Every structure is written in C-alpha cells, then in structure tokens.
Picture 1 (cartoon, rainbow, N blue to C red):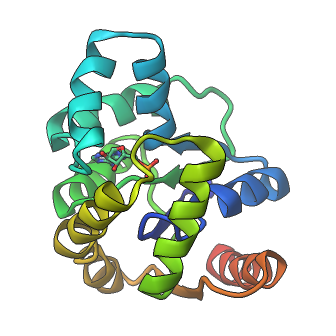
Picture 2: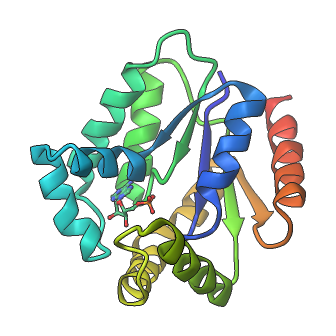
Length: 191
Ligand code: AMP
C-alpha cells in the first residue's frame, strides 16, 4: 500500500500534482476540499454546514472532517493506496489519520510538503479565482486561509518530521520539475 499525504499551503499545487501522482501510481485520491464542494453543490446538510466555514476561510471542525475522511476511505475497494490531498490540516487530524490507518494495518508512507513562497501563493490563488470562480479564492478569504495555514496546519511539518516520513519539495518552478522531485521522493520512500 502506498499512502501519500500531499501537503502545502493553499495554492501550493496539491491538486495539480495529485492528479499526476494518481495517473502514475494508480492510487485513489481523496481531496477533502473537493468532497466538501460537492456536498455544497448538492445542497446537503453537510454542504450547508461546510459552506459557512469555507466562505470564512476557516477549517471545518476536526470531528466532522475525520468522520467524512474515514467514510470516503472505506468506500475504496481493491485499493493500491490513497493520496490524501488537503487532509490532515491539524495535529488532531494527523493523529486521527494515523489511528485510522493503524486500525486497518496501514500507515502513511510519505508526506510531501510543497513549499511555495507566500507572494507566489497569493498570485496563483487570485488567478485561480478569476479562472475557476472558486468562491474562497478572493483576496480577503485567501489572506484568512493563509493565516489559518500558518497557525493550525504548518505545525504538521514538525509532526511529520518526528514521524520520520517528511519530504520537502520545492514547489515553485515548472510543473514537470516539481513532479520529477516528487517521483524521486516517492521511489525512495517505497524502497
Ligand atoms: P481546499 O480545496 O483543500 O483548499 O479546501 C477548501 C476549504 O475546505 C478549506 O479552506 C477549509 O475550509 C475546508 N477544508 C478542506 N479540507 C479540510 C480539512 N482537512 N479540515 C478542515 N477543513 C477543510
């Protein structure tokens, strides 16, 4: 089983690189942001709850998020492994993921930290907002999401370092060069 956490600030390229990893390694993909946006689109109760947080640039409460994640994870059959994109975002979520995988006799193989300078993140997200119309990609909400990233999510870097599965990836530059670095890191971890 190859279980990968793809990590990084909003706009660091997690979604783009996940798609390429999925294609190369045949993994299942869980993007918690995509799951929540689908719930909003379908007008579910969960979607209504999630929208309130997403529009404010805040995180959905851990307990809710952890339940959603386990539900999606268990829907995969005959899986070669999973790429977790946008999860975990807090230490509590990382601990819950470890426990969930443990209970299923699995573990995270590698955490890939896509590191991109802050000014580049801003430029990328504003551009994405214009192109995709994603409601939370406006300057005010982006700023809030970056604050949340630094206070609640970035501490996971040290958490995964102490787990011994942290891998730093230079996240600016060409998409191909970034993907090459990712593949090198994965192959090393999978040995
Ligand atoms: P993303 O598409 O990963 O940038 O996520 C968009 C928004 O969905 C975030 O700003 C959060 O409000 C919410 N979200 C996605 N994943 C999580 C998570 N693991 N924990 C809490 N909130 C999340």
